[in-house]
Picture 1: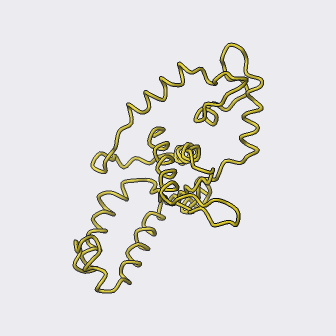
Picture 2: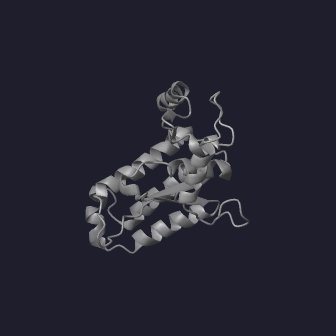
Picture 3: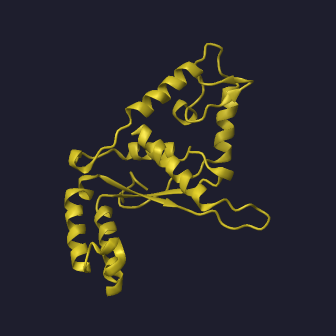
Length: 209
């Protein structure tokens, strides 16, 4: 995983262990009357407005204003604004941890994230080029509305993107979805709801970033 000797390895955001949630809820029983959060991991607990004996925690006025501020301050940052500075692996992990607190219908939690760092970024781009290089001629007539007449045109575009965008990022995060698997006697939720859940997870990352 990131931070180990091989930083090129990819890893996925893990799902929330039920025992982990239970420990957070148990820790709320020790919450002092002054509204502080003794014994509670505030980063982990904050994404959910957990309730204890009918009282919201953390304090509603502070929590609502903090969330509203995050929403208002969120901005899209484009490649032309990238500085090329490296982002700490710890921050990437924190973003992924925020993502896994997103809502999902039926608790399917379909989001999956694969992180590429270091030379892993080049390997990802090279693998993408190798895949499209194997496409038949007919593919290029329809793909992207015929924007790239042949693979050579697509390759030139990708190489420009590699230099001007992707290698200016210290980490590339692939956003993926693992579709709920059919199971006898269990409802299969619509794919659009799984896509929406992944979108919510990405929004969590945007807000924290």
